[in-house]
Length: 121
Image 1: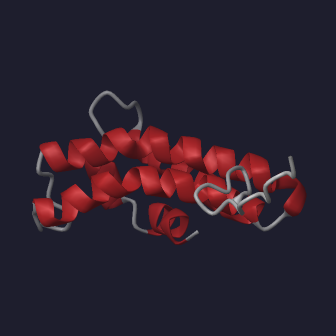
Image 2 (image 1 turned 120 degrees about the vertical axis):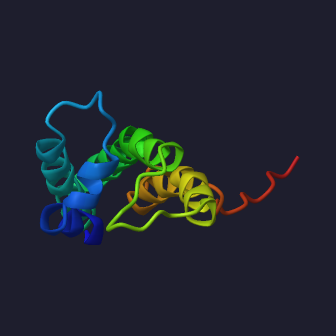
């Protein structure tokens, strides 16, 4: 939810890291903010939780190229160039963010599965 609000209230940094091949970057950033807010709300509504988690996971996958572009093109945000101490963990954590959305929605319980009792022979 916080990221969705940031996309809508402070879009400049997100627009700056959007790859050149993405059409209408400002509109895409606004739509991604709305998508994040809708996904966060959906996680709170049980009948929508699974769809929201899958949607947020797909969203996180689809915005990964912007994070890669940000890192490789060394795009400053607010005049500040961020080092690989920021970009490395940020890129490495993207799969965790994807998993987190799926886990929060109950789509997966990995790696927290409860051990099943052994069946008697």
